[in-house]
Image 1: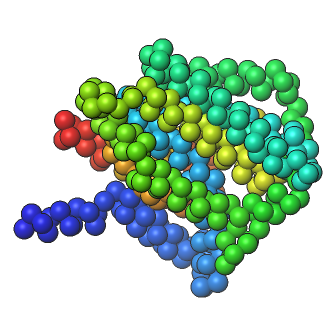
Image 2: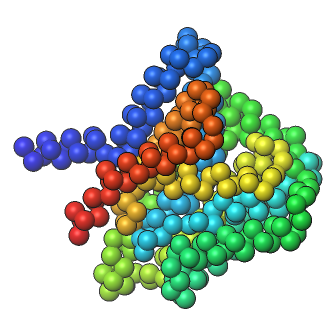
Image 3: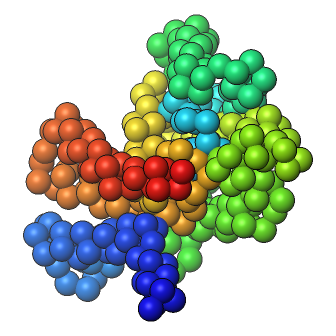
Length: 325
């Protein structure tokens, strides 16, 4: 009997629940969204949902690592990191394709530096993660305003835009293919490397991990550094999609990146969760936003509904911490 219960629990894991919810909402919405009926229309909508979800899914990967590290960790600098990395890459590209690799490396370097500073402040200086990342977000915003003074120059080149936005294989856009390949890398990192095991251990119990020989500060610093790097990668991908940069580009992904992680079943206390869950959470949020947009709800109303969804999910999953303790 206990074995059957364990099997049922595995089948009803939060990542699977989130994925099934995304599929159910998508199929349900296809009956009343204009242009969504018929196999062709449903397939086109599905591909579009995947294309939009890819950006959130990539950005939320770094948030997943930070939350898994425990210590009440949430990276509030993700939004500004996305924007600054996209600005740097767009300035270097300047709507040309010749310097695309230099632009990518420069953008990733910016994100890595921001993440590393966050990690040092949190792991070494013992500043609370919310305070540290919020402060860095403010500093990053100030840097953007000081450098660009309200005018953003440059943009993505034509080949870069085609690579990110247009279908490449089986109707999947370049952004979706990058997301799939990226998800495999994150899966390997979390499940097939020593660092991944250490990250879960640190998130579960930092004192026990320290006594077991795990270098807790280094593990936390790497988590925040990777969060910054991944946010920068998301900014680079968004640049190819939007073709230009604006100051609120990354801000729209801060709240959803946290919500996707939580909806996917990763506990806010750390040490328990998966990136597959985050991917499912990104799909759920994208489908819900698509439905709310189709019924012409205003952006504030959509934010309220998304906030209520997150509150409900936290209420349902939030008991896991007390049960674990």
